[in-house]
Image 1 (cartoon, rainbow, N blue to C red):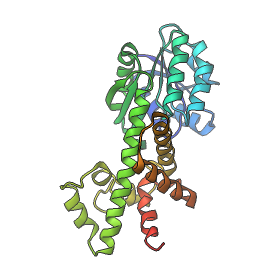
Image 2: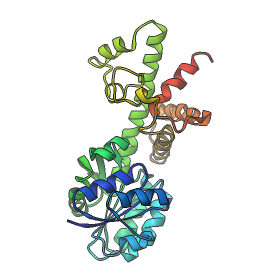
Image 3: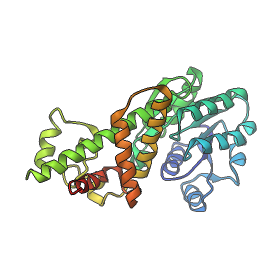
Image 4: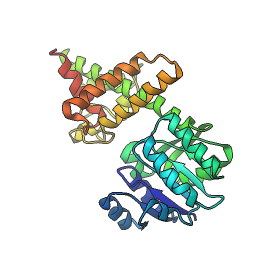
Amino acid sequence: MANIAFIGLGNMGGPMAANLVKAGHKVTAFDLMEASRAQARADGAGIADSSVAAVKGADVVITMLPAGKHVLSVWNEVIPSMGKGALIIDCSTIDVESAKQAHALAAKHGIGSVDAPVSGGTGGAKGATLTFMCGGEDKAFAAAKPVLENMGKKIVHCGGAGAGQAAKICNNMILGISMIAVGEAFALAEKLGLSHQALFDVASTSSGQCWALTSYCPVPGPVPTSPANNDYKPGFASVLMVKDLTLAQDAATAAGAATPLGKHAQEIYKAFDAAGHGGVDFSGIIQHVRGLAGK
């Protein structure tokens, strides 16, 4: 079993660190928030006084942080204190350029590195069923894979440095667009007198089938585990969808790609967030769509 340092113990990082403890690893954790540190301690992790202290003697360092600037700041702090032959993995969702800079920093110090953003939400983090989209050299990925398998079900090597982040933002652009489409369809069905169940039964087995419909249906009833049945409590908060769609638009601009639906989806979710619904699950966008009918 490995000595693992885990930095960033939020809604995703906390359960992920707990699953590493369950798998038998020695986990030393750090977070700026006392409540997060207390939960990690209760889950069996050791708690360090700082991120630098956490990585001392670690075979593997994992970060799960809000944005690229936080990742680069923490990596700049901890990498000089990591031992030769250690591996650093970032599971945050950040911009591709910051991910590449993080890899370059690790390489400069002779440390193997992987960008490994996740899909699966808080449920996947708790249940160890996440999908990891990984970027980095073959050797680093091979070392990271057994560790990631303690936290997820599918581990995909997408390519070199930053490729995991590229896959993540493309995937979530699809998700944001498709959830709006599913919400529009149900809002139209309501106006036409069609029941939620009837539309679900048809679309879920027809050409309209997609994950946003069959696994995360935005209306109560057809999929009992979807946030719609729990007053749209996340899950995956709408403010995080705004973040990912913005990352996708920034990447599209940098790459010279045309993503008109991605841009429109970003605008719709930004309006939902600006109206005070950033903490609502992203499937709650159907509420915003219904409201557009009267405008």
